[in-house]
Image 1 (cartoon, helix red, strand yellow):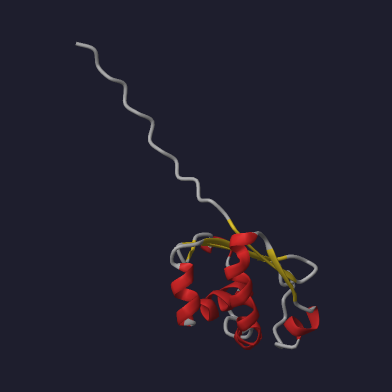
Image 2 (cartoon, rainbow, N blue to C red):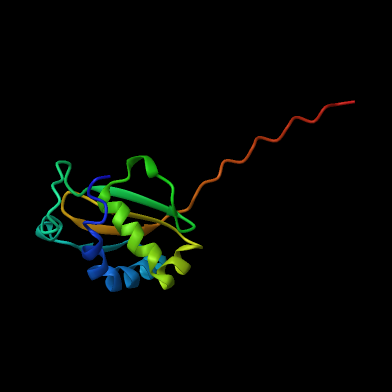
Length: 123
């Protein structure tokens, strides 16, 4: 990713608010409006916009295939903050930004597929 690191200052600016809102996700979805000009002021040219979805399970991203510089930098800032990283270790959180540049954070339950029980052989 060529632009990785360009959004770090933006995310550091919002880190105190994001940290507070992440902890409030236990009560439901949390939102934070970020203005498009703040993304644009980084100097990065982004044809796709700033839309992303980042799913963290136990503090680790699980959807690395569609990682963007914006989401990668956000994860870097979150994981480098000791308090946030420690809190995220036991959480399943989805963080996304849509076309309206609204940051949405919500908890989710991770569904783990259980192996089907093996048939019991009759004797």
